[in-house]
Length: 439
Image (tube, rainbow, N blue to C red; front, side, top):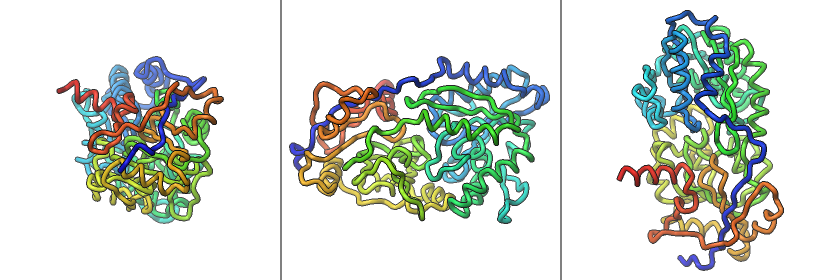
């Protein structure tokens, strides 16, 4: 396959103006806990469960360790509890393994890490379905809900991804997550606040630690939320998070190529809020960006074969198809009741083949005419590579900086895109740098 007629690409760096950023992430967590009234809610010497989920929160190991150390300094006995619903295959071993990949283990945390999937049934929701809750958290003297607030990848509502979701779905383990998702999107919108309010009244939640990230995926700030204020405060925090969230600076693309998908980047593998595609039964896609042809080239190491979200793409590589572990993907899909996103698209032998197929089927007469963008994943959007057809419209934007020269798309001898060269500061680039240092 010849690449000489592929469009040249230009590096685009985003300028995210007026974005807050915590100078010291660990200190922000510590200060939030110390400023709360947790001392009045948990007896000295009491056990405190600190929730850690499966999302790719930057420096979650640092944040979790700061929470543990602070709680211990206050005279409590903290432990980490896995709060990730059905992720990690819905097993204790899988969830413990996911936490370890984030740097969260007993050695690094200096406290126990509980990933058992045993639950207690505390009641039933409005549809008569049982409400499950993590047994380890339920038996603790206090629960600290620590989670990032951000728009959900499947629906919009007053409560999306945040403290209530971690309480109702994350700590519900596989069974609880399945019950909340049982009725699809209408059920999610209704059951998330309903089950969350039920659990706030019947469990020992003593503090919410709301993490907000800026567009550069750095911690913007931490807010301590008392349990009785979570229902009223979380929608306001969600609005704030929505304003901080990065988006692609395009309304329409002919081709969007994503280097990696994975649950460390988004619960859906590819964040619909970035790519504009929902692919949820009965739901329309988002209004922007409109993408004619979308491709994904690899699975992240951290996603452990769970390729949920690959169905959002039109084309992929045979590498991705071979790397899919159907067990966690099926567990995740059947628990969420969203099946379309797990369909594996057309898979081609090399990245060159994928680019060629995208360019030849994106409804342009010439490959050079295509409005093409390349991103490393849907979380790290500070650097984007674009074709010349997009450059002119971007030159006048104050929030972007374009490189002076364009260059050919860099492919390796085996036909793979040289992602590390394009995105040295991405998760994949840092992963390669760490491997080289070890060698």
